[in-house]
Length: 350
Ligand code: DGY
Image (cartoon, rainbow, N blue to C red):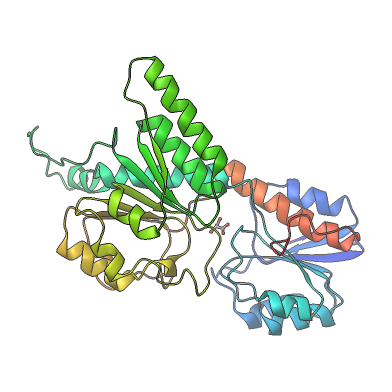
């Protein structure tokens, strides 16, 4: 699909993206926009090489693509200077290779904070209240009347929400769980989440003034403290996946969590050792998990699909219309900025 065919700068999007604002931004600024409409979900390096061709100024790519030296050097040979991931995460981008080839890299933070936090909150609730299991039960025609013990789950009110990584998304998620369900907070982060702490303190005072039990917060000295003490733990290490976070949640760490805890992962799949997780779910039927991401995405490790105590969704944390259009717009602005000689809008290196 080609927009503004006579445009001076050739910009490729490896996938159709939501909305049209991003296309207009580029075409208004003398760009010819080419959108790849190839049916297969994940494009290979060869597919993208063919798209880049011999003249290309910038590319908007996706987190499923392997952006390394082969693609960045091809982009450089084609006269390109700009690449943006349509994602806040950039673990699919080899930044050294981009720098070596003089390609500026952009990502799309900010616009997905609340949407991602809302999905983490949804998974927390779905897991704690066994919503998917109950839905499947209904659809299977198994409901034959109310029973006192039918799909009994966990009450969140007054329990402790644990956040590993209290950055933008982790803090937004924590606020939702605290304000929505009056949960206490324990978080682990290398940096102090001052605004989040202030929010919990103020909200606690408000509750107290209204004769309710105030919520409390604690910054944990270790990640293990969070795992040990929290009833619902969300991993919000967005967008970091590197050797420091790979298999962060493994057999040993799962073992210290409460037997009826809920674990949510909306960061990157390999942060959780999925084989260990399946074993843990099998051995602890009251332990529940909500997963948006998977170690071998798009696949699940054997056994996970059969676990009733797992809620699994296909990497949709940022999938609200507003956010996806915003991500597309930011990605276009990133590429456009560089082509027009401005600093790239959002550069993960900065
Ligand atoms: C990201 O942006 O990194 C998410 O994983 C997809 O929105």
